[in-house]
Each structure stands twice: as structure tokens, then as C-alpha cells.
Length: 215
Image 1 (cartoon, rainbow, N blue to C red):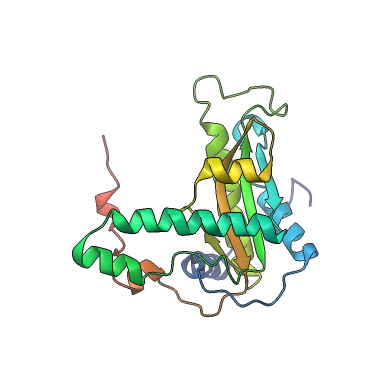
Image 2: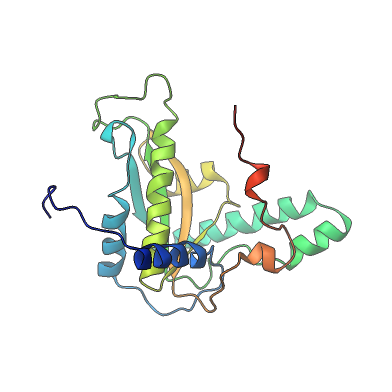
């Protein structure tokens, strides 16, 4: 595509973009239907279009396929989830116990997403004052991956109830890599335009006025 002929994004496209963002959900309930390696690689190539500080492209993706490694992840989730449950009490504990917080058992694809904190690419540009921008760059790739997956009818669930040190050790990655996300990927059992935590009464969406300020 020539830079002199950029695409035109019309009102219909913008409406569809809003729908894509609205129907992009954190999925916890997956079908066990397989997702091909080719499909996963297509999504990852789209994720890599994302911006990164200094064009450092610090994202590193690991497809966790072995059963023993997945069992380590499941065990870590179960321990951390039990600890989290114990941190609540009364009605909030009961509400937490009813939530489904991961799709580790059924999702056909598990992706561990790391940030390389010492990437050769980018030559350090833009990182001297805010080195955390490397991590944020990886998060932009995850967000792009999430939307791309939705456009192909796939869902993604971000599992954060894990011990990152334990997972990093199990996956035997270079010492400069830090875990940013553990993602479950697959076809959703059900689709909703509202977040599951809203639907099950855990937390409503907040209004823009609560998080937008002017100075």
C-alpha cells in the first residue's frame, strides 16, 4: 500500500470498530475446538504491528503446549485463587467464589507473553527516563492481539491470578524477560457485549467523569 494513498475509514467502518471494541471480552468459557498454528501466527503478526518505545518491539510470545507445563500453570492458579478467596470475607467472599476466573482447562491455546527488558532493537531510544515503557509496549501488543482475535471469532482470557516467578521459572526463559500476561485463546462458548464481572455483579463499569480530568 502506497503511503500516498492512505485508506479512508468511513462511518460504517467506525461503527464496526465500536462493535469490535464492545464485543471484545475477557473470555473464561472456551470450546475445546482446536485453533491452528497458522491462525495463531496470523494473530501474532497483527499484534506485532503495535507501537513500541523506540521501535524496540520487546514482546516475546511462548506457546505453552506441553501438558506438564500447563499443569504447573493450573496449580499456580489454584493456589493463588485460594489465597485471593481468603482475602475476602462474608458476602464478597461468596461472590468471589462463584466467579469463573480462568479458562485454563478448556482453552486450546495458552500464550505466555513476556517483555525483554534488554532488547537490542530500538537502541535504547525513549527508555532512559521511562524504562517501564518497554512493559507498556508489550501491553499495546496484547490489546491489539485481543481485538484481532475477536475479529476472527476467537476470544482471549487474561489470567492474572498466577505467581509470575513460578511461571517464569517453569518456562525457562532468559533472565532479561519478565512475564506480562498469561493468555488463554480459543472459541468462546458464549458471547456477550458486557464484561462477565459486570454481568455477575462483581463491579459495574465506571463513568468517564470518574477518570477524566483537566488541568
